[in-house]
Length: 469
Image 1 (cartoon, rainbow, N blue to C red):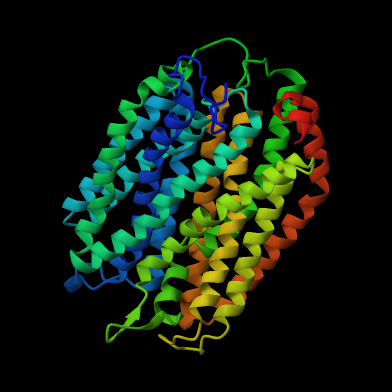
Image 2 (image 1 turned 90 degrees about the vertical axis):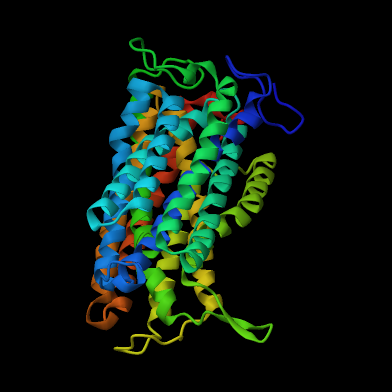
């Protein structure tokens, strides 16, 4: 039954108030996983290019670009393998707990690292923990709302908003710690927060639906969240829709990987964005480079309430935008931001190593467009997976999405590295060509949107009041 807030309260085997409170407590673990990921993504490039005397590795910007791509491939590639652990071996709740423990171990290793080998060991541990936690968490969240489909869609957007609070806070705090205490303490702080999150996660165990607490059941027919059999034609049609939408997700991942998934944009912000915000208390203030990584998650947090409210109002009027339509729209919006970035970097003088020629407002606006597009893709596709895939494949599908982001993030890092060669002479052409090619491919999917929405409505009629897709 829904409580006064409209969120589910009755969950099988859980507390009567398990819905709202349970989702908040278990999501806190992924909030800190985002703190971990964004903190590392922000400072690892700065750590790589810092001189050895300043506590860094003394690498070039090209090498730093490749480092972030390698880490993205690790952090987003391992979930497709480790997602099977939650689906088949431990169950999703235990996979989340185990992932948190491994992330803590990774940050501890980074704090104590005295060599490049130990640095990589810490990164691999954090990536393994992420690989266990991230694909299992959406499955865990969906289990709190097995019979309330529209509510679950809203919850996924709010869940995505909540975890991006971690993405916004991580770079801000990590950047401040890096400046005041050094890189080692900046590497450690996210691990300390994860210790607190693990305590809350373990304490929330009684709120977690019983089906997710133990090991997954073996044998029997594939089922959806409500326990209805998912076999034969229904299973094939649902998987087909998910795979077609995965193609759009791949294209979006390329745009995201080039724009926000590598160090290239951060390094552009460092050298070519006018970061001055005025004079306060007799001193000119400049936005720290590390803070730019907070723009994307912060904008997601700010925009999510308005987007969720708008979609709810449209649904009440019978104009609910189909989930495939939302995904295509989001992919196009994010790709438009990459094309905008191409024209922004065109203003950089040829051969310049530093020139504040890109306005702070322009740069932030491009991030805003990218972030709004992301809201229409990631939480929507996560929700669709929990709806259209049988339980024993959900973590695997979530991991497949993360693998796509890893692979395309890796490819994006190489595009960024190529753009930085010859003093950035290829930035404009590389970004522009990538953006227009991706946009053209996304447009090819538009004619398939009505078919996907009809297929979802026909084979999953109970998933929305009125059968909306």
